[in-house]
Amino acid sequence: MTGMSFARPLISEQRVEQQLQSRMTSFSFGDQVTQGLVSLEDNAPPPLIWLRQDQRAILDYTNRLEDYSTIHWHGIRSPNAMDGVPYLTQFPVAQNETFRYEYTPPDAGTFWYHPHCMTMKQMAQGLTGVLIVDEKNNPGFDADIALNLKDFPLDEDGSLLPYFTPRGAARGGTLGNVQTSNWQQDPAYDVPTGGMIRLRFVVTDTTRIYKLVFPKVSGKIIVWDGHPVEEDIP
Image (cartoon, rainbow, N blue to C red; front, top):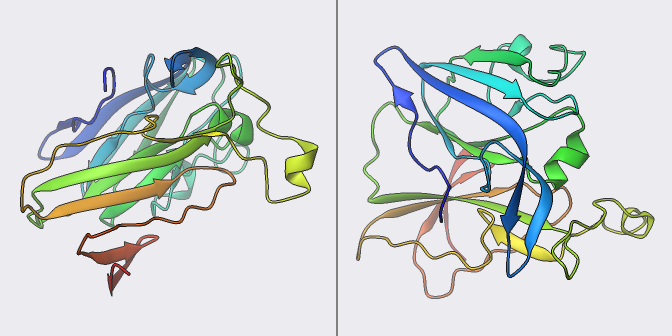
């Protein structure tokens, strides 16, 4: 998965720091190259962002797009000024401007981030990513894998199709025709044999509802939408 960043950012005893830049990019979902995508990486999906519970996070966001943009930290209990909603909590970030998001996440868990300016357009172009807040005490999983579930509307030549259609709006929404996990159609990840694995599923589609199936897998659902539960996998 060339170009994808799953590494934790610089972590000191006091804070986590990371530089983020939105930009236009391209990516090959198959044999064709798709132009007109938006990410925080070149030729790759937005990175997995790792934070730590009760530790200060400093995230400097620079917008390299022609459109205004912001970042909303979906599910994070942050100060209102850091919530990323244009004209309500902050001014939108113009091209080549930088806004510093600074907060201390009080909750460990799986969250996600996306723009709250030109929202539908930039999300459809790919600007959705996973944010993980590590527990203060390591729970001891042998592998921890985050899966960003998202579809893309692509033509046969790989070009982006309209993300909104009147026909789709009159029904269940405008669905993409290429379903991906971390922008990959059939990703495979190595895990330790017999290990205890934590899978984090984040649905960042604007429309699609997923039904996940785990054939011949034993395990438990430990969190639903940020809330701890304890359910066996059906």
